[in-house]
Image (cartoon, rainbow over all chains, first blue to last red; front, side, top):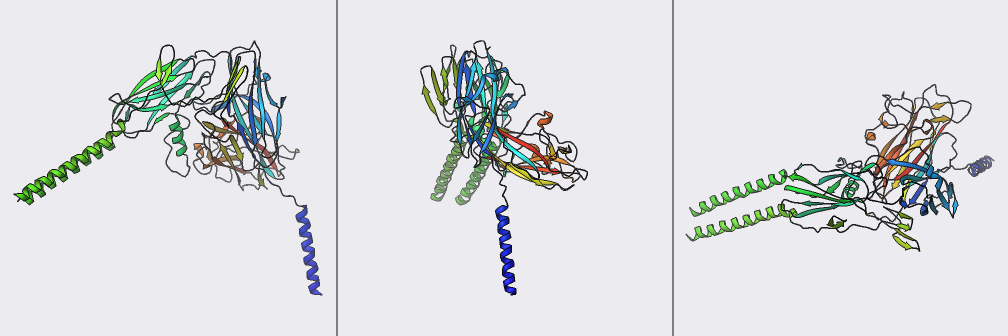
Amino acid sequence: MIKSLIFKNFCLLIGIFSCLLAVTQTANAASPSLGIDPPLTAINIIPPAIAVSPINIQNKDDSRITLRIQIKPFKANGENGELEYFNDSLEIFKNIQILDANTPVETITLEPKQTKKLNLSISIQQDMGISDYYFSIIFISTDIPLAEASSSVNRIGIATNVLLSIGPLETPKVILEEFSSKLLLDKGPVSFVVRIRNLDTHFIKPQGEIIIKNVFGQNVGKLNLTRTNILSDSIRAIPNDIYMQELRSKENPDKKTKNTYDFKHPVALWKENFLLGPYTATLNISMSDEGPLFTKNIYFFAFPLQALAILIAAIIAVVIITRKLKRYANKNRI
Amino acid sequence: MTNTKKNQVNTNKFKAVLIFGLIGLIYSLVNPFLPQIEAQTMSNDNYIIKMQDFNTVSGTTANESYELRSGISGLSQTTSEGADYKVKTGIENLVSPVSFSISLSSDIVNFGILNPTNPIIRTIDLSINSLAVYGHSVLVFENSSLTASSSANNAFIPDVTCDDGKCDVQSASEWKNALSYGFGYRCDNIIGADCDNSFTKANYYKRFSNSENNEIIQSIMAGIGSSNKKIRISYKVNISGSQAQSNYNNIITYIGIPNF
């Protein structure tokens, strides 16, 4: 009798538990993830014209996502290619559309893992003046998950940048703001600061190199500068690939060593450790395909104190050993 | 006499070895000066400068009236031409098989029930793949302070100003005191070193830019292009005893932006 009662209660509990399991809904938080390509598009238009460029937007998560499309103008923030948005809505934005299968859209919905190909369409009329416009096309999620307690909802967004030049490209007005290095060094690597100020109406993409010669006039180093965009009325510091590799290699937060190089202030890096005597560094840089070409020499002097100390120590060791050997030889003679 | 000669010969041999050793040492020290390089070519009407090895695979689309360059990145390197246009998409200096991307570990941070002077800290992870670009930043802002969901009262949890009252949207400051109330965040590097340097000290917090007050949007991370960067964002909320009982909510937006 008792056993039967226990069995009934057990069955009842199992039943209630099963019902609760069936009714309870699990609230799964999504892990939003977006990809975009290309991250940068440069367009030059001579009006009147309509330019069309593809944009691929990808939902990398397992949940559907709805994205609102915004266009925001930006300007350079600092000298390393970072940007800063401003709130003005420019007149030209009326001529810019995002097309999904030739239909203008302001929002899109992406299924899990879906990549959608959109088109950026820019229509420029004949009367449009010569100018540059820099803006981002931003895709921001609009979904708001259900919150039953105090919470912060996290929205994700991703941007692609557009550099739009209207009018013919001519020889730009540019100033070589700075080409410098330390004057005295005891060892490498050597950092060269190359800063260009663009006074032109259009953005530019200079191409250049630094050639380093030693006291004998031999070429001992060549640094290819990274091709970067310099917006109209802004300054940009130009790095080289070695600098970027160096930054990446030192970016492990577990390493307690402080980064020698600053991401905010790019430099062209010459990774030569042993340096001795006077050097000449020559910057050759072409500001655009139409010129102008700038050439500038700077000089620096290197004196390797550490290597010299080792050399002196080696010479002293040689002298001491030689003397001891002489004494040993003299002893044997006697 | 024979022994003396032998010793003299040995000493001379030893000297010779030492001199060769010394010459070798000096050569190895001077060696870096010896390698030669070749010049490249750049030219205009007035100059010719020789150069080599520039990667000139930048993408270009053009017709009679416009030219379009998809620079820095591209999933593939392609060239196409039409009757009045030319398309080149490609990679300049950087080759990446993946697009520029951003991921969040969760779309919601649940604080649960808030109790006075009992700070609650919740974390999410943010990852970015920016190998396709020279650098990136992630902007962050809140739509409003944490605001009571019940419309009857307009209660809100203010954005934190930290223990010394000095932290804001740009500067971090220490927030340890359980009697400092508000809502704020901090950033810790997991992979890479993209968090702002002001977060290097423990318990240092900032507050989010509030778009309701038209505050300038701030960057939460910035760095050089990489295949894998990850930060941990800690949200902290602490309320006073006089805070009205309610659920408080807001929206935090993160935007991944490639450098230009």
